[in-house]
Amino acid sequence: MNYQDPELRQTLAAEYVLGTLKGRARLRFEKLAAQDARLRQIISDWEQKLGTLHEGIPPVDVPEHVWKSIQKRLGFGLSDHVKPGLIGSIWNSLMVWRSLTTAATLALMFAAYLNLFAPTLVVNQYIAVLQTEQQQASWLIKSDLKNKQMVVHIVNEQTIPLGKAFELWMIKEGDKPISLGLISPDQQLSLPLSDELLEKIKQANVMAVSIEPAGGSPTGQPTGPIPYTGVVSKI
Amino acid sequence: MSDQIALQTLLAATARKDEQAFNKLYSLASANLYAVALRILKKEAAAQDALQEAFVQIWHRAVDFHSDKGSPMAWMATIVRYRSLDILRKQKKMLQVDDIDLEQVDAELGPLGKLLESDMAQVLWQCLQELNDKQRSVILMAFYDGLTHDELAERTTTPLGTIKSWIRRGLQSVKGCLER
Image 1 (cartoon, rainbow over the protein chains, first blue to last red):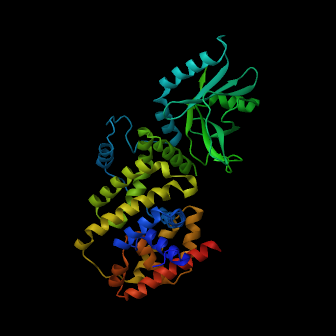
Image 2 (image 1 turned 120 degrees about the vertical axis):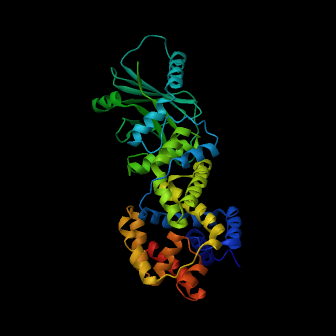
Image 3 (image 1 turned 30 degrees about the horizontal axis):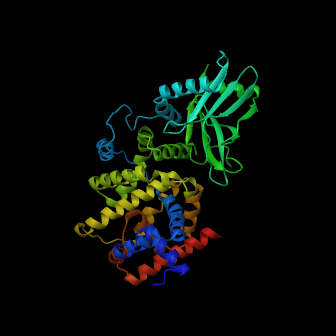
């Protein structure tokens, strides 16, 4: 078979995704795709198209033991403090798992603050240390209510993929994220804050940075991965 | 839409090996994904195995998901489907094969279209409506029930070559329609 023939590639990819390509033909095709990025793209396109048909299947409750088996398979510490199936809104749940790292974040925030800035006591500021899941701090976001400005300090320089941008968000539990604009991976930045934004920052629980197309999120909501998060604290 | 963002956020955290986030992801997505496996495998124990396999894979492969790969749900459902098909192919020989009346299939699967929510799914469904009934039915049976060419031929008492060409031409038409 000539696997370079465009029509054949489309047909095989479509039948692979549909599931009608089977047995040895399926394995052969998988091997081929493993070495052919363009073919993987064709498969991925079909997966996106046909994958939406799953929306037509009504959900069915899963018995609890399945999650236990998954945890066991993956060697998770079976600490059952968060039971699947009992979760309300997502930002609620985001807060639950974020709060688990609060102690570490606070320690880091305090250390970052002491190290980076004059040791004078400052009040009326809201700060958030944004960090990766490995708890590496990347930015310190300081919102000053008195001077009505937000300063984005660099703690550790980050690298960003070409053609992408870091976008800063604040999130209040139960609400949609609000964009605070694009931030630089390696340069300190000061932004004026409107009274309206100031009020919202006071109520925000979390700040986060997502990776977006170069001009920022096209939808007004995060569209890419969100690798950096931090809890907002008043000091 | 907010569900999409929630799932995306949780998948991104799962990629960083955040167990709590993965737990939330399971809570939000497992009932929909279990339904996908159950639809193909018909048996609860097998569907639960498929779901388990799929979530183990999602844990390891979350890093591969990017929002340009479509919706997080479609991405995860595809993983569940492939695991279900693997299991189905292994146990296939033990299953009893019933005959299918193609007209009944269209009547049964037709209403599924009303449940499709996303724009992309709606467009796809419209394109499927442009196919003739038989083409559409065999494609949907292959998709939702994991049937192979041979099984479709046998169960619809249609020559194998005809089934193959219905599916191939049907998929080509769908692609043409989606690109219009």
